[in-house]
Length: 256
Image (cartoon, rainbow, N blue to C red; front, top):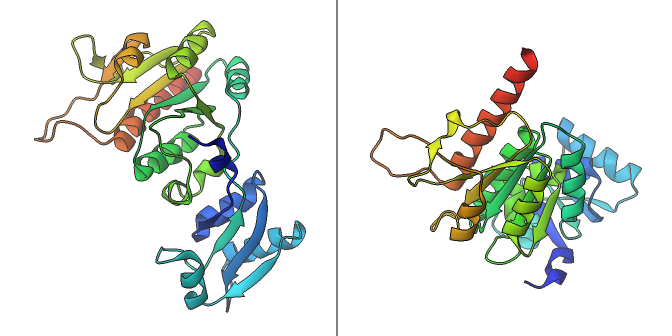
């Protein structure tokens, strides 16, 4: 993967993704587009942030936005931004060390932008301290992913790494118990796994699931029991269920 792609300027679109990109203050923002006409509270906040940061601002009609952004659900809101601000894996290690209940999301070659966006939205809602994505055969945090995450991606620490299993082993050395989602003879129902301390959750790719070495490196393998006719849930839904189970267990522990 060309690392220069990470710095490439692109358009983020949609009211909520644009607002979250501006609120987070993590990207370089070169221009803000808002709808012409009466402004909603969200648009007023976009305008206020643009003025405060002296970012060029223009009001546009739908036709102009269509010409700039294409046939996407842009809602006449967009920012021209620098590439996604990935962090180093050391930043995530530091966040893990600082939190005895840290949760890390590791994605084993997720290639569908909707799944990635869904997982990032849930990760942000669950207070995940970092997301690890391998550099090969994985979707980048593109504008489509930002839109699918409803802007949650803009508030997360996400690192690209060359070797996912090496990161898993480093996390384990920092007292992180790593659980992969799969279905094999060693798998336990996900609600029976202890997520109360530091934990890592590994979600496999849409087709192949967990890679062989990734699966062997996990401390636990969890599965989601199903009663219907389909054999599995998509990656976004499966990951969400397990992340919320981890949150439930951590809150139950604190309430005792």
